[in-house]
Image 1 (cartoon, each protein chain N blue to C red):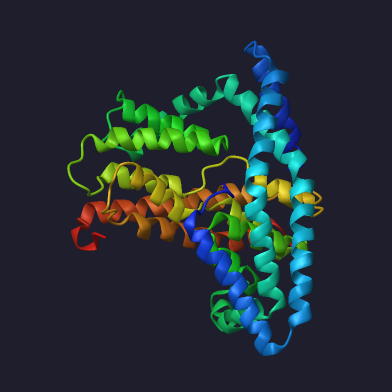
Image 2: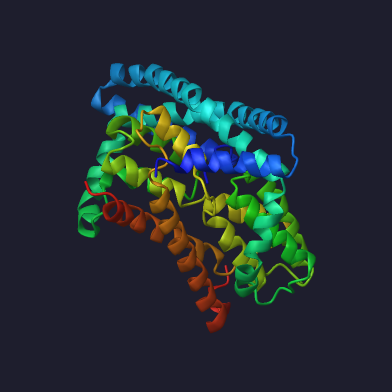
Length: 205
Length: 170
Protein backbone atom coordinates (compact mmCIF):
# COMPACT_ATOMS: atom_id res chain seq x y z
CA UNK A 1 0.00 0.00 0.00
CA UNK A 2 1.09 3.56 -0.57
CA UNK A 3 0.76 5.97 2.29
CA UNK A 4 1.59 9.35 0.86
CA UNK A 5 1.77 11.29 4.08
CA UNK A 6 4.75 9.22 5.22
CA UNK A 7 8.26 10.59 5.34
CA UNK A 8 8.60 13.32 7.92
CA UNK A 9 12.03 14.91 8.02
CA UNK A 10 13.27 12.58 5.32
CA UNK A 11 11.16 14.56 2.90
CA UNK A 12 12.89 17.81 3.83
CA UNK A 13 16.11 16.38 2.46
CA UNK A 14 14.52 14.72 -0.54
CA UNK A 15 12.56 17.79 -1.62
CA UNK A 16 15.50 20.15 -1.15
CA UNK A 17 17.75 17.71 -3.01
CA UNK A 18 15.32 17.46 -5.93
CA UNK A 19 15.01 21.23 -6.32
CA UNK A 20 18.67 22.01 -5.57
CA UNK A 21 20.13 19.47 -7.99
CA UNK A 22 17.71 20.55 -10.71
CA UNK A 23 18.67 24.22 -10.35
CA UNK A 24 22.41 23.49 -10.37
CA UNK A 25 22.16 21.20 -13.41
CA UNK A 26 20.00 23.57 -15.40
CA UNK A 27 22.46 26.40 -14.67
CA UNK A 28 25.23 24.23 -16.11
CA UNK A 29 23.22 23.17 -19.15
CA UNK A 30 21.52 26.56 -19.53
CA UNK A 31 18.07 25.02 -19.60
CA UNK A 32 16.49 27.71 -17.45
CA UNK A 33 13.25 28.22 -19.36
CA UNK A 34 12.61 24.48 -19.42
CA UNK A 35 13.06 24.37 -15.67
CA UNK A 36 10.65 27.27 -15.10
CA UNK A 37 8.09 25.67 -17.35
CA UNK A 38 8.45 22.37 -15.49
CA UNK A 39 7.44 24.04 -12.22
CA UNK A 40 4.21 25.40 -13.68
CA UNK A 41 3.51 22.15 -15.47
CA UNK A 42 4.26 20.09 -12.38
CA UNK A 43 1.72 22.08 -10.38
CA UNK A 44 -0.89 21.57 -13.07
CA UNK A 45 -0.16 17.85 -13.26
CA UNK A 46 -0.36 17.45 -9.49
CA UNK A 47 -3.73 19.17 -9.17
CA UNK A 48 -5.12 17.29 -12.16
CA UNK A 49 -4.03 13.97 -10.64
CA UNK A 50 -5.44 14.77 -7.21
CA UNK A 51 -8.79 15.84 -8.62
CA UNK A 52 -9.16 12.94 -11.04
CA UNK A 53 -8.26 10.32 -8.44
CA UNK A 54 -10.30 11.85 -5.61
CA UNK A 55 -13.63 10.24 -6.49
CA UNK A 56 -12.20 6.75 -6.75
CA UNK A 57 -10.23 7.14 -3.52
CA UNK A 58 -13.40 8.21 -1.72
CA UNK A 59 -15.42 5.40 -3.27
CA UNK A 60 -13.00 2.70 -2.06
CA UNK A 61 -12.54 4.27 1.36
CA UNK A 62 -16.31 4.16 1.65
CA UNK A 63 -16.59 0.52 0.56
CA UNK A 64 -13.76 -0.54 2.87
CA UNK A 65 -15.42 1.28 5.76
CA UNK A 66 -18.58 -0.73 5.13
CA UNK A 67 -16.41 -3.86 5.35
CA UNK A 68 -14.91 -2.64 8.61
CA UNK A 69 -18.25 -1.70 10.21
CA UNK A 70 -19.80 -5.05 9.20
CA UNK A 71 -17.14 -6.87 11.20
CA UNK A 72 -15.18 -8.16 8.23
CA UNK A 73 -11.92 -7.18 9.92
CA UNK A 74 -12.56 -9.62 12.79
CA UNK A 75 -13.63 -12.30 10.36
CA UNK A 76 -10.46 -11.94 8.30
CA UNK A 77 -8.31 -11.92 11.43
CA UNK A 78 -9.85 -15.28 12.42
CA UNK A 79 -9.10 -16.66 8.97
CA UNK A 80 -5.49 -15.46 9.23
CA UNK A 81 -4.90 -16.99 12.65
CA UNK A 82 -3.56 -20.41 11.51
CA UNK A 83 -1.05 -18.84 9.11
CA UNK A 84 0.00 -16.25 11.67
CA UNK A 85 0.50 -18.81 14.42
CA UNK A 86 2.78 -20.66 12.02
CA UNK A 87 4.78 -17.47 11.38
CA UNK A 88 4.85 -16.40 15.04
CA UNK A 89 5.74 -19.65 16.79
CA UNK A 90 6.88 -17.85 19.96
CA UNK A 91 3.62 -15.95 20.45
CA UNK A 92 0.83 -17.60 22.43
CA UNK A 93 -2.32 -17.93 20.32
CA UNK A 94 -4.53 -16.66 23.13
CA UNK A 95 -2.37 -13.72 24.07
CA UNK A 96 -3.22 -10.06 23.53
CA UNK A 97 -0.15 -9.71 21.34
CA UNK A 98 -1.45 -12.36 18.96
CA UNK A 99 -4.86 -10.76 18.65
CA UNK A 100 -3.30 -7.35 17.92
CA UNK A 101 -1.04 -8.95 15.33
CA UNK A 102 -3.96 -10.59 13.54
CA UNK A 103 -6.06 -7.41 13.70
CA UNK A 104 -3.12 -5.46 12.27
CA UNK A 105 -2.78 -7.92 9.40
CA UNK A 106 -6.47 -7.85 8.55
CA UNK A 107 -6.58 -4.04 8.67
CA UNK A 108 -3.60 -4.07 6.29
CA UNK A 109 -5.38 -6.51 3.99
CA UNK A 110 -8.39 -4.20 3.80
CA UNK A 111 -6.15 -1.20 3.14
CA UNK A 112 -7.05 0.56 6.40
CA UNK A 113 -3.56 2.00 6.78
CA UNK A 114 -4.10 4.23 9.80
CA UNK A 115 -5.98 1.60 11.78
CA UNK A 116 -3.28 -0.94 10.91
CA UNK A 117 -0.52 1.32 12.27
CA UNK A 118 -2.33 1.89 15.57
CA UNK A 119 -2.96 -1.85 16.02
CA UNK A 120 0.62 -2.59 15.01
CA UNK A 121 2.03 -0.28 17.67
CA UNK A 122 -0.19 -1.99 20.25
CA UNK A 123 1.14 -5.37 19.09
CA UNK A 124 4.73 -4.12 19.41
CA UNK A 125 4.04 -2.87 22.94
CA UNK A 126 2.69 -6.28 23.91
CA UNK A 127 5.69 -8.03 22.37
CA UNK A 128 8.03 -5.59 24.15
CA UNK A 129 6.87 -6.85 27.56
CA UNK A 130 8.99 -9.98 27.11
CA UNK A 131 12.05 -7.97 26.14
CA UNK A 132 14.70 -6.43 28.37
CA UNK A 133 16.97 -3.73 27.03
CA UNK A 134 16.83 -2.26 23.56
CA UNK A 135 17.41 -5.31 21.38
CA UNK A 136 14.52 -6.49 19.21
CA UNK A 137 13.17 -9.98 19.88
CA UNK A 138 12.61 -12.57 17.14
CA UNK A 139 8.85 -11.98 17.04
CA UNK A 140 9.33 -8.19 16.89
CA UNK A 141 11.63 -8.48 13.90
CA UNK A 142 9.21 -10.89 12.21
CA UNK A 143 6.29 -8.55 12.86
CA UNK A 144 8.06 -5.51 11.40
CA UNK A 145 9.28 -7.48 8.36
CA UNK A 146 5.65 -8.50 7.82
CA UNK A 147 4.61 -4.84 7.97
CA UNK A 148 7.28 -3.65 5.54
CA UNK A 149 5.72 -5.93 2.93
CA UNK A 150 2.55 -4.93 1.18
CA UNK A 151 -0.42 -6.95 2.41
CA UNK A 152 -3.19 -4.90 0.83
CA UNK A 153 -5.73 -7.00 -1.08
CA UNK A 154 -6.78 -4.16 -3.37
CA UNK A 155 -4.20 -1.58 -4.44
CA UNK A 156 -6.87 1.12 -4.51
CA UNK A 157 -4.61 4.19 -4.60
CA UNK A 158 -2.68 2.79 -7.53
CA UNK A 159 -5.88 1.78 -9.31
CA UNK A 160 -7.20 5.31 -8.77
CA UNK A 161 -4.03 6.75 -10.29
CA UNK A 162 -4.20 4.35 -13.22
CA UNK A 163 -7.82 5.30 -13.81
CA UNK A 164 -7.00 8.99 -13.72
CA UNK A 165 -4.43 8.47 -16.49
CA UNK A 166 -7.05 6.73 -18.62
CA UNK A 167 -6.45 3.02 -17.98
CA UNK A 168 -8.99 0.71 -19.64
CA UNK A 169 -8.95 -1.60 -16.66
CA UNK A 170 -7.27 -0.06 -13.60
CA UNK A 171 -7.41 -3.28 -11.58
CA UNK A 172 -6.05 -5.59 -14.30
CA UNK A 173 -2.67 -5.65 -12.54
CA UNK A 174 -4.18 -7.28 -9.46
CA UNK A 175 -3.00 -10.86 -10.06
CA UNK A 176 0.52 -9.60 -10.73
CA UNK A 177 0.36 -7.58 -7.50
CA UNK A 178 -0.83 -10.60 -5.47
CA UNK A 179 1.75 -12.91 -7.01
CA UNK A 180 4.58 -10.42 -6.51
CA UNK A 181 3.67 -9.38 -2.97
CA UNK A 182 3.17 -12.93 -1.71
CA UNK A 183 6.52 -14.13 -3.00
CA UNK A 184 8.29 -10.96 -1.83
CA UNK A 185 6.78 -11.49 1.62
CA UNK A 186 7.88 -15.13 1.65
CA UNK A 187 11.42 -14.09 0.71
CA UNK A 188 11.46 -11.49 3.50
CA UNK A 189 10.21 -14.00 6.08
CA UNK A 190 12.60 -16.72 4.92
CA UNK A 191 15.61 -14.41 5.15
CA UNK A 192 14.37 -13.50 8.62
CA UNK A 193 14.08 -17.17 9.56
CA UNK A 194 17.58 -17.98 8.31
CA UNK A 195 19.04 -15.17 10.41
CA UNK A 196 17.07 -16.29 13.45
CA UNK A 197 18.26 -19.88 13.12
CA UNK A 198 21.90 -19.16 12.46
CA UNK A 199 22.02 -16.64 15.30
CA UNK A 200 22.38 -13.16 13.93
CA UNK A 201 24.45 -11.68 16.75
CA UNK A 202 27.23 -10.46 14.51
CA UNK A 203 24.67 -8.74 12.29
CA UNK A 204 23.30 -6.70 15.17
CA UNK A 205 22.77 -3.17 14.00
CA UNK B 1 -10.57 -9.30 -14.44
CA UNK B 2 -12.87 -6.41 -15.25
CA UNK B 3 -15.29 -7.95 -12.73
CA UNK B 4 -12.99 -7.50 -9.73
CA UNK B 5 -14.25 -4.02 -8.91
CA UNK B 6 -18.03 -4.45 -9.29
CA UNK B 7 -18.19 -7.90 -7.64
CA UNK B 8 -16.12 -6.80 -4.67
CA UNK B 9 -18.19 -3.66 -4.20
CA UNK B 10 -21.43 -5.60 -4.49
CA UNK B 11 -20.44 -8.35 -2.10
CA UNK B 12 -19.14 -5.97 0.57
CA UNK B 13 -22.34 -3.92 0.44
CA UNK B 14 -24.54 -7.02 0.49
CA UNK B 15 -22.59 -8.50 3.40
CA UNK B 16 -23.02 -5.25 5.32
CA UNK B 17 -26.76 -5.22 4.67
CA UNK B 18 -27.07 -8.83 5.81
CA UNK B 19 -25.27 -7.91 9.03
CA UNK B 20 -27.85 -5.12 9.48
CA UNK B 21 -25.31 -2.35 9.04
CA UNK B 22 -26.43 1.12 7.92
CA UNK B 23 -24.51 0.55 4.71
CA UNK B 24 -24.91 3.93 3.12
CA UNK B 25 -24.03 5.85 6.29
CA UNK B 26 -20.92 3.71 6.74
CA UNK B 27 -20.03 4.31 3.11
CA UNK B 28 -20.38 8.08 3.43
CA UNK B 29 -18.35 8.14 6.65
CA UNK B 30 -15.58 6.15 4.95
CA UNK B 31 -15.65 8.26 1.81
CA UNK B 32 -15.30 11.39 3.94
CA UNK B 33 -12.26 9.78 5.54
CA UNK B 34 -10.90 9.17 2.03
CA UNK B 35 -11.41 12.83 1.18
CA UNK B 36 -9.57 13.80 4.34
CA UNK B 37 -6.64 11.55 3.45
CA UNK B 38 -6.52 13.16 0.02
CA UNK B 39 -6.62 16.63 1.60
CA UNK B 40 -3.73 15.66 3.89
CA UNK B 41 -1.55 14.25 1.15
CA UNK B 42 -2.23 16.91 -1.49
CA UNK B 43 0.52 19.38 -0.36
CA UNK B 44 3.10 16.56 -0.17
CA UNK B 45 2.10 15.27 -3.56
CA UNK B 46 2.19 18.74 -5.16
CA UNK B 47 5.68 19.40 -3.79
CA UNK B 48 7.07 16.08 -4.93
CA UNK B 49 5.44 16.06 -8.35
CA UNK B 50 6.93 19.52 -8.96
CA UNK B 51 10.28 18.19 -7.69
CA UNK B 52 10.18 15.23 -10.06
CA UNK B 53 9.12 17.47 -12.93
CA UNK B 54 12.10 19.77 -12.23
CA UNK B 55 14.52 16.84 -12.00
CA UNK B 56 13.31 15.62 -15.37
CA UNK B 57 13.48 18.94 -17.20
CA UNK B 58 16.95 19.72 -15.86
CA UNK B 59 18.22 16.49 -17.41
CA UNK B 60 19.41 14.98 -14.12
CA UNK B 61 16.95 12.12 -14.16
CA UNK B 62 17.83 11.18 -17.73
CA UNK B 63 21.55 11.32 -16.96
CA UNK B 64 21.06 9.15 -13.88
CA UNK B 65 19.09 6.54 -15.81
CA UNK B 66 21.63 6.52 -18.65
CA UNK B 67 24.40 6.05 -16.12
CA UNK B 68 22.76 2.96 -14.68
CA UNK B 69 21.30 1.63 -17.93
CA UNK B 70 24.15 -0.83 -18.66
CA UNK B 71 23.51 -2.46 -15.30
CA UNK B 72 19.75 -2.47 -15.91
CA UNK B 73 20.20 -4.08 -19.31
CA UNK B 74 22.34 -6.79 -17.81
CA UNK B 75 19.64 -7.84 -15.35
CA UNK B 76 16.75 -7.07 -17.71
CA UNK B 77 15.21 -4.33 -15.59
CA UNK B 78 13.62 -1.37 -17.43
CA UNK B 79 15.72 1.71 -16.67
CA UNK B 80 12.63 3.94 -16.70
CA UNK B 81 11.53 2.28 -13.45
CA UNK B 82 14.80 2.71 -11.64
CA UNK B 83 14.21 6.07 -9.88
CA UNK B 84 10.79 4.97 -8.63
CA UNK B 85 12.02 1.59 -7.41
CA UNK B 86 15.03 3.03 -5.60
CA UNK B 87 12.98 5.67 -3.78
CA UNK B 88 10.11 3.33 -2.92
CA UNK B 89 11.45 2.03 0.44
CA UNK B 90 12.59 5.52 1.47
CA UNK B 91 9.69 7.79 0.63
CA UNK B 92 6.13 6.84 -0.29
CA UNK B 93 5.33 10.33 -1.54
CA UNK B 94 8.34 10.61 -3.85
CA UNK B 95 7.79 7.20 -5.36
CA UNK B 96 4.12 8.05 -5.93
CA UNK B 97 5.17 11.22 -7.74
CA UNK B 98 7.53 9.14 -9.87
CA UNK B 99 4.82 6.53 -10.51
CA UNK B 100 2.46 9.24 -11.71
CA UNK B 101 5.23 10.51 -14.00
CA UNK B 102 5.71 7.04 -15.49
CA UNK B 103 1.94 6.53 -15.94
CA UNK B 104 1.64 9.92 -17.62
CA UNK B 105 4.54 9.42 -20.04
CA UNK B 106 4.14 5.77 -20.98
CA UNK B 107 0.44 5.23 -20.29
CA UNK B 108 -1.05 3.07 -17.51
CA UNK B 109 -1.67 0.12 -19.85
CA UNK B 110 1.82 0.03 -21.37
CA UNK B 111 4.40 -2.54 -20.30
CA UNK B 112 6.36 0.07 -18.34
CA UNK B 113 3.19 1.51 -16.80
CA UNK B 114 2.01 -1.91 -15.66
CA UNK B 115 5.39 -2.86 -14.20
CA UNK B 116 5.52 0.43 -12.29
CA UNK B 117 2.00 -0.15 -10.91
CA UNK B 118 2.82 -3.70 -9.81
CA UNK B 119 6.07 -2.71 -8.09
CA UNK B 120 4.38 0.18 -6.29
CA UNK B 121 1.46 -2.06 -5.32
CA UNK B 122 3.56 -4.86 -3.88
CA UNK B 123 5.99 -2.85 -1.74
CA UNK B 124 5.74 -0.63 1.31
CA UNK B 125 7.63 2.36 2.66
CA UNK B 126 10.09 0.07 4.45
CA UNK B 127 12.15 2.68 6.33
CA UNK B 128 9.03 4.40 7.60
CA UNK B 129 7.46 1.19 8.91
CA UNK B 130 10.69 0.17 10.65
CA UNK B 131 11.13 3.53 12.35
CA UNK B 132 7.49 3.84 13.43
CA UNK B 133 7.27 0.39 15.00
CA UNK B 134 10.66 0.23 16.69
CA UNK B 135 10.64 3.80 17.98
CA UNK B 136 7.22 3.15 19.55
CA UNK B 137 8.85 0.62 21.90
CA UNK B 138 12.31 2.21 22.21
CA UNK B 139 14.16 -0.57 20.43
CA UNK B 140 17.54 0.53 19.11
CA UNK B 141 19.03 -2.74 17.89
CA UNK B 142 16.86 -3.94 15.06
CA UNK B 143 19.15 -6.86 14.09
CA UNK B 144 18.42 -8.16 10.58
CA UNK B 145 15.07 -6.37 10.12
CA UNK B 146 16.30 -3.92 7.48
CA UNK B 147 18.18 -6.55 5.52
CA UNK B 148 15.23 -8.96 5.39
CA UNK B 149 12.82 -6.16 4.43
CA UNK B 150 15.05 -4.85 1.67
CA UNK B 151 15.46 -8.37 0.29
CA UNK B 152 11.66 -8.50 0.04
CA UNK B 153 11.63 -5.13 -1.76
CA UNK B 154 14.31 -6.31 -4.16
CA UNK B 155 12.31 -9.48 -4.89
CA UNK B 156 9.22 -7.38 -5.55
CA UNK B 157 11.11 -5.20 -8.03
CA UNK B 158 12.36 -8.21 -9.98
CA UNK B 159 9.07 -10.11 -9.85
CA UNK B 160 7.06 -6.99 -10.70
CA UNK B 161 8.65 -6.99 -14.14
CA UNK B 162 8.62 -10.78 -14.53
CA UNK B 163 4.96 -11.11 -13.56
CA UNK B 164 3.83 -8.48 -16.07
CA UNK B 165 5.79 -10.39 -18.72
CA UNK B 166 4.09 -13.58 -17.57
CA UNK B 167 0.48 -12.43 -17.17
CA UNK B 168 0.20 -10.02 -20.09
CA UNK B 169 1.04 -10.99 -23.63
CA UNK B 170 2.42 -7.78 -25.07
